[in-house]
Image (cartoon, rainbow, N blue to C red; front, side, top):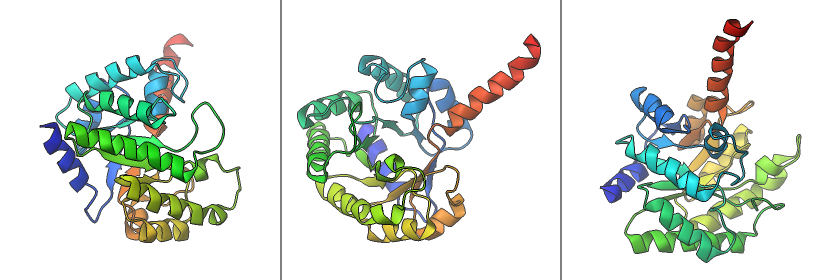
Length: 253
């Protein structure tokens, strides 16, 4: 069953229109998005953590996170991919062991980022490839064709107004290297320039994921640029909490 869902999930990245994720944070939000017509479900780490009163960046304890992911996956028949941040570890073997625990919840995909969670900067390409390869080897051992969405924080960590074109060649190099190490997709949050997005989609050997945020082209334009996956990150959680405050406000004024 999990293997079939994983294969189905891979196929969702092959259409003309991008696979769209309105990211969720618990079983209730997963069911709401499923009822809206989603073909798959994706968590967002910021949202999952905030919903439990934690900050993003692996502050939510792994044991607690796995319980949440398990409950989400049990609540829906749709394939579920999990934002697993940096894998809750630095060493490749430890990352792989944690990924195995995630796979055992029934997840068919994960986001795996190259920033040093709790530290500074990014892992070097070779180090991050070793980490990705360890996850892939573990997934293969378990017999699950896990979709590893390899995220680069190159653009997200760049200073406001930074020249993204200057970072672009490294992003393409990371996409190629991560694919060779076993990644299934390449995620470049905060990349907004249409020409750079198109060039990345052309150069990347694996499907490209772009996050919707201020300044990013609309989904229809992203599709024309070659983007195969679109996600909304913490936006849905933020909007839901703002609406809750707005509705509750008049009751207390």
